Image 1 (tube, one colour):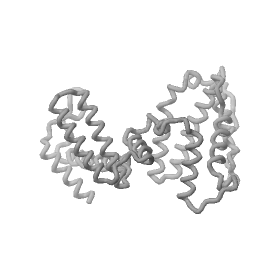
Image 2 (tube, helix red, strand yellow; image 1 turned 135 degrees about the vertical axis):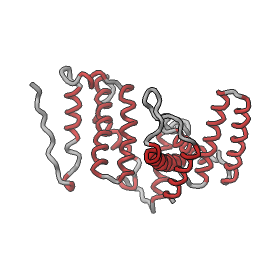
Image 3 (cartoon, one colour; image 1 turned 60 degrees about the vertical axis):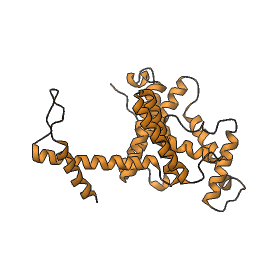
Image 4 (cartoon, rainbow, N blue to C red; image 1 turned 90 degrees about the vertical axis):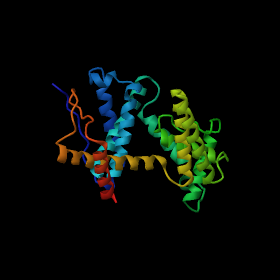
Length: 281
């Protein structure tokens, strides 16, 4: 027979001060107890890695959707990953959830001297300057790019790297230089394709993508957002193509495995695509 667990009561917004967070820690400790959940007990830092990424992305999707109820749920899922990892660290004797919270509280107080100290600021720009100065002093012995996470989406990582090196003058003086670099990298990609060397093609393609990200930054455009918008448009337009195929042909031809396959002329599919583009406009 299972043991009951006391779920925290709902608290009015104006009275909420984090008093329910200990319940999440308690649930996680119960799940990791010797007689807890077998699946939870088998997890480690590496096995949870993918869930942290997935939950963070789902939070972003919920923000973009504007659905606050969905956002509340997804934030809970992300908070679970924070507590789960903290409890695994406690199990290994490294740190616990209170160490995590204390660490971020200490950092926020230290980096907001205009709120918690005697400093004064005139606006947002000065706040950001002070934040970066304090952060730089804390991490003086680290490389300029060490703070850019390797697991970030590649386009976003490239943009953050180019932003950081530009602060020390490693940058084109204007957008024209970055545009010329795009042309240079495209020519090198074409040359690598003619060589047939796959490793070289991959390297040159990466260089071209990085140059495009730098070009976007010079024009004040977030490359990750730009590509995400294109992916959204592509998905929306191809959904129109699929609808038109079903209307006119019943479906795409199916392979032996039952998967949609080729067979409808490209000219027909392209016509449906152009219809979708016109609808978008």
